[in-house]
Length: 96
Image 1 (cartoon, rainbow, N blue to C red):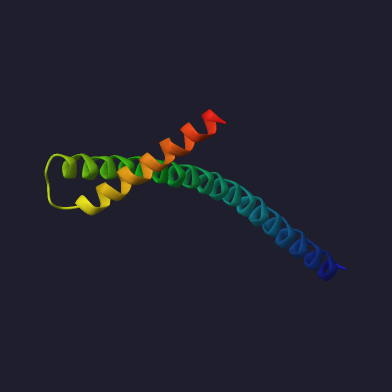
Image 2 (cartoon, rainbow, N blue to C red):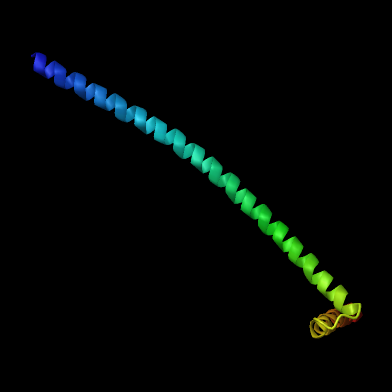
């Protein structure tokens, strides 16, 4: 009979350890999920910041080429032509 009690005690002990390990893993998983969300938000913010800097860089390139820089003149002319086409399209829609 003592042997059965030892087996039951051993099983209870092992089950307790497994349940404790499961609880620790749940807490770790929750913490990792929170860190993942924070990281995702940081990545999104960095992407927005990067897009903002790219827009500023493009505007600076255009302004630089308008000031007489030989670099990017073709690109600037294409951008100006695209803007003129957009304005013409808007005027056309307003006149209809």
